[in-house]
Image (cartoon, rainbow, N blue to C red; front, top):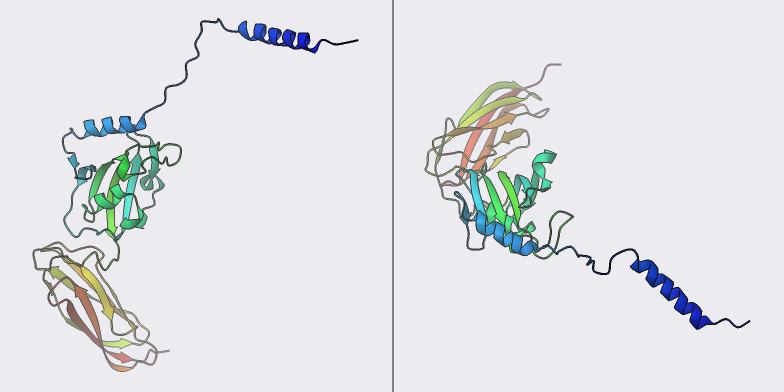
Length: 281
């Protein structure tokens, strides 16, 4: 028996058309979701935000608001810093937060987005700013994760906790002056292998913040500690020195502690002495 394949094909197509056409009226138009223009949304957000009281806009377009201002040295473009931050979209969706994790972040200013590199150089230790970062100073056309869309500006609250070691960071810091309550200390008679601690109080007698760059002892048996933050004019802090004579280190001992700061001269020498006696068994 011959099968009329053409007729069968026509019948199948007809059934398909009838089946499809019976689901929706012919005059119904299926609307496609409108594509969101994140770039225009961001530009509109920043244009309105710029008008608010307390907002400053830099030449690059970075906007910032000062939440807490302090005085002191500021980072350079290569400085390593420690910060707490809370990052959101303009709508307030959180995409990253060291505050929520309760874990500060440390990084070099040349390792982050341009908005951070510029913004953090405005801050001193203890300052807290709110940054509104245009997309060209953030991720631009490249989305980042599920929340940050292409061309989206970012909002960050940033607190600068510490300026970490960086030779360049203090290169142009203004000089100030200091004084110690004493420059020498004699422990008198001490026992070997026994900790002996003294404190040298240092006062900033100048007009600019005093930065103790380094405190270095002449002997490993002498352990000094230095202030971790700049000392404001007229304020004082302490340098603790622990002398721990080694076994067999008997009789008269004299040690030095060299303090380097943004002063002229840069170095101040502290001296300690002791008469070490043998520890009794």
